[in-house]
Every structure is written in C-alpha cells, then in structure tokens.
Image 1 (cartoon, rainbow, N blue to C red):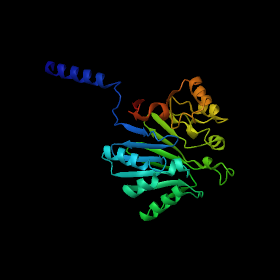
Image 2: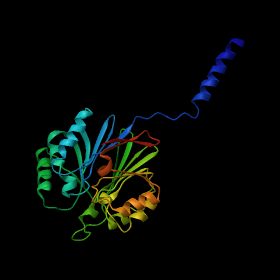
Image 3: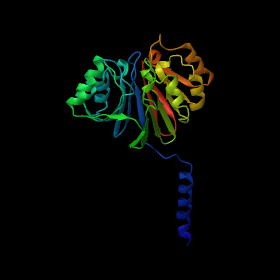
Image 4: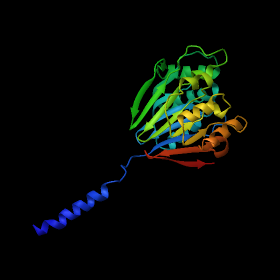
Length: 271
C-alpha cells in the first residue's frame, strides 16, 4: 500500500492546482476601423467573421486589406445597421471581392448611389439579404449574436437612423453591444437590453437626450466611439466620464482593436 501513497498525494496536488484555474478560451477580436465619421467593425474568432457596417465609399478596401492580413477569405455575416452612406458606403466593394455568406439589413427604402451599388452587388452575387422584422440569434465559434430589429415601420421624416439594427455579441463572460446610429426613439426601444462590457457608442457619440439614462442602464465598463472630433459631443464625453467608463474614440486613437479572452477585454491602439 505504501507505494501508492505518493501517487495519491500527487493526484491530490494536481487536482488542487487545477481548482480555481480559468478555462482557456480562444480570443474574440473586434477591429474598429478609423474611417472618419463612419462605422466599420470587424468581429472575428479563429473560425468566424462578422462585419458590422462598411464605412463610406472607398473604405471597403480598408476592410479587404484587414481581412487579407488575417488570411480571412469568408465573411459569415455582413450586418448593415442602416443605409446612410457612412455605414453602407463600402459594402459593395466588400461583397464584390469576398465570399459573403449572409447579409442582414433593416427593411426600409433609401435612394442613394451607395445603396444602389450595394443592391447591385447583392444581385451580382445572388445574395438575398434578410430584411429584419424580428430579432434573430445565431452562434459562431462560441460567440452568440442577437440582432435586434427596429420596432416601428416609421420613425419620422428625418429619423431613418432609428431603423438601426442593434447587435449584441456575448462571448462567455463578456458582452459587446453595437448600436449603429440609434437615436432617442431607438434607444428607448433597447433600454432594457441588459448590461454590457463594451458599448459602441450610438450615433457617433453625438448628444442624445436619453443617452445618460441608457448608459446608466447598460452600465458599460468600456466604450468605443466611431466618430470625428467635430461630431464627438462634449456632453457625451462627460457622461462617459461621470459613469467611469473607460473610453476610446477613433478620432483620437485611430484604429482600435478590442480583444476578449472570455473574461475581460484588452485594447490595442493603432494610431
């Protein structure tokens, strides 16, 4: 029996060492491209890629370059939050030059050269976009995505921003929330969306009457604003400071990369 005692002791020691260790996850990375007062985000894991918005015309090449640098040949989902030129502008370039499996977009009409090129690219690749009327959830490589549909068919003559699709990406213990150009009506609709670890600040960090209430409800630890210096409202900056949100902005920090290990998020700044 004595000869088994060291083995038992070793097994007990190894078991004790393993207790309390964090499970190791592969990284979930989000690239916020510096494309001026525009939105463009690339969300990727080892085996999946999602693009949310494509900046303006000419920014599609920047997306393709980043994908090529990371040996990415397929985009699983392209999410077009709404049809403003600073969100849909680079989408035709992306669709025409890489394999895009699925496209999700809101169901409303907008007449612009950028939208026409986007629709032509979809037609040329025989892609039928999912025009969202109901929330949709899908999981890619351990990341659970929920895309929230707008709740109204009409928000006002000049309020197309409130059609913005909102995307929540949950990766183990971290939650990332992407809000497009959501304005007051849309923020009211998602006020109960739950807490997040990282918030993509809505509407290029412009002033919104209910933004403080929204920030207080979702309680982000980190925030990223895709904006220009002229668009970044001092009021928004003060709100983020008041709630002790660690804040980044493309107009000051350039390209921003957020990396989640499943427990926390680290940032890489690429000025």
